[in-house]
Image (cartoon, rainbow, N blue to C red; front, side, top):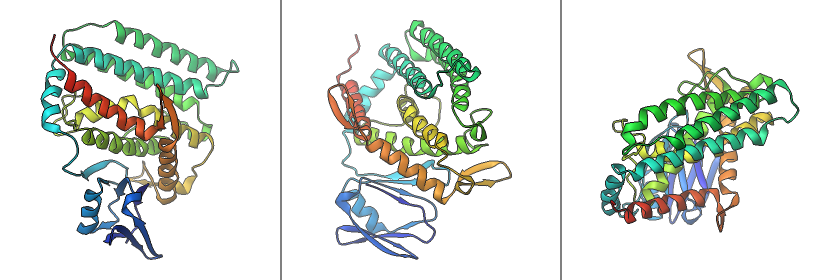
Length: 329
């Protein structure tokens, strides 16, 4: 279970071995062993004894802003053997193996984007159908470019890869817009600020995923600040920006599905500074519940049938083992 604390005046405190949520409407008691993570919005208050209870039970506590972007977290000091893994992580970062790792990651990202477009693409030979197929063909071309490029170090080709990734991303979101009902279509991808409801919801969903990726890396003992591809962001968890690319399509799928079903309505959003869209109360509840349900769904990957959230954590642990076993040729 994930606790989402986003009500004005809400307080979370400890009561014996449980969390006690107090609001103007009443109180709710939740045993600590039923909670996996806690999202804290600026409008909520959390006592220190509640945070200590979370630490004792290895529960991730993430502080997020109104846009869903994580700003800080509290975790147990028992997570991972960071000092050992970090040394091997550095060796891997500056090796030729990092080139293949990032090429595979970006190729998988494009494969996932193609999968999303195919999952919703109309098959009626309409103009939208033809445009989306053209976009899919473009993404296939960029996959081939990425797979064919060679270099001894990732820094040698990172600018080129970023250029291809950027153009491919613009083409992908052009296709995503075509998948939506007319009233929800958008001109281009906008992050912070978001200039339309779809990008607003997508940004918030990415914020949720960002927190889960960072948490999985920390629990596996990996240093989230030591990126491989994203290495120029000072004081930013750059490896999270690397790994999240593998899983962004999960959020894309959920948000596209919600907008195609017209699950959102005007009251789900508010506008600030005359043009920035933000998710409001009911909109946050719809999206958070939908993302959590999707991540809790059991799917098969390889020979394992686990929830998507568990597959993400397992991937982080496998990445830690990859670093630990790495040796220079």
